[in-house]
Image (cartoon, rainbow, N blue to C red; front, side, top):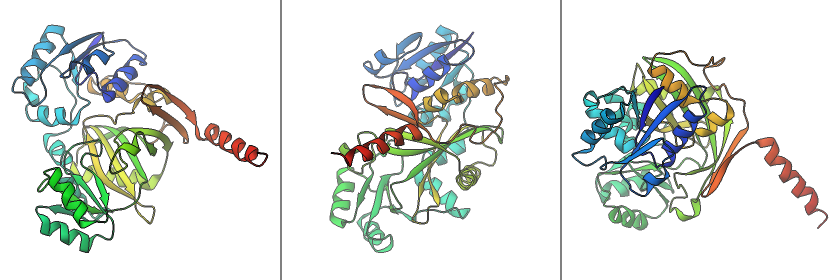
Length: 355
């Protein structure tokens, strides 16, 4: 039985990874570590331990201590900040790992660096400006349209994002966030976004699946309306989205290896524009695919160990379209279909006539 060590084990992304491996056709022994003493209690692993934060000088030493203590065969990270830190010293890890190249991680961990790579390759892109100072912000309002999208170049969950048409508000927001030389301004495309999650091995695609976000959970409490927590998502299949996602990945790494989850936003012409790649980890709600029949964490582990995994008839979008995943705080997630959802909507409209 393989022993898998999972960091940030009390977080939602890792919980989805753990639940997926529990659904695998073989048994794994799971070890969880987390730097938050409260979140650690939520870890659904067989063992769990408290460790320092990723920005602590002892972080790597603690990882190796528990790797040796538990005889872990493999380590996986579901947190971007941890991936950024560990990527630089990956050779010091005392167990197996499956990570993209250091350069690919460096680029994808900086949204403006990614933007420049995609711009070089002529991919559809929202025009974006780096904000060094207030003068750059004034130029952004002149060049990018009436609404501009502010966001930090690093971080996940819509970190620092704000949609605004007001220069004073934008400046106040960046001042409040101490964001000069850490923020970009971009033209606003639309609220519609889509994600293409994929696993690669030495430049060859293993599997990829697309899902479109239906809405953000807790959107009302976020200034930008983006909470970073998907509330509802639906499986889709679109060859144009597939093509854009693959081009976005190869613009950054000509031999992709590991996990690449491409986030895209639709523009006014309904063309998907890459906005970032969550690299080295699955998106938070990847249990969606597992429950639907595509266990990507299991395929990921088997690929890392160069072992055969269940046959996949279609490498790209093997799941049927219109499967829907609905989740929320303190609710167990639900796998349903668009047809089922629309059935209730249709009944409502019919009853409304009689009320």
